[in-house]
Length: 268
Image (cartoon, rainbow, N blue to C red):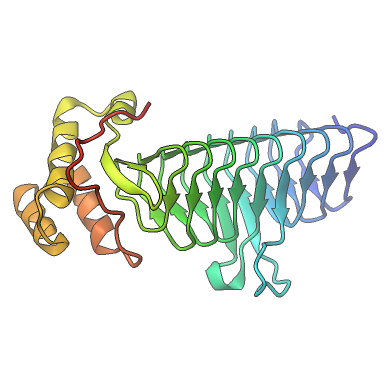
């Protein structure tokens, strides 16, 4: 059902089940899958594809051109996965030629009010961006990441799977998978043990992740020495191998741990 006051371009491709609220504006290159709900006073524009059952709340801007002075009108894209919820006044921008022309949001994500996903970000599945959290351009976010309120992430930074970014974290370097950050500039303070348990990680897997965290961050080794030791100790442990590969492929460097502080092991 499309409200009489909505403005929907005749070239937009909307599944017949899509609901469009009052005063919404939908551009010519928008595609929306079955069961989408596009709320009142929203703008969905650009080369934007919404998966099934995406819900967009009032005031959100989805698929607008990037806030990038180098942008020259190229037809970048935005893709939003199935079941993702975009809350009030959130902003999501299309990709640019310098970043693969694609901004992508995974499935079953929750982008809370006033959150921002800039151009060329690649966001995994089941990611939560709490109120006023913001991703600058070219950021990669793994699956099941939670960003608390007013988190800011610097451009070109990576956030590993199951990371938990505490409220107000200002992240300027890559965040290791499974870790918790705090502060400005954000430091890692422990592993997201609560989050891992909620996702079905057993005690043995969590022990291995905790041990790897301490080897990397708490025992005073250089990073290359710590990683070499973990390769030797955990040759077939997939979670530890993921941490090793993430660290080895870092270009911005890794967010550090605060020395002399006890580990934090709660994702709450």
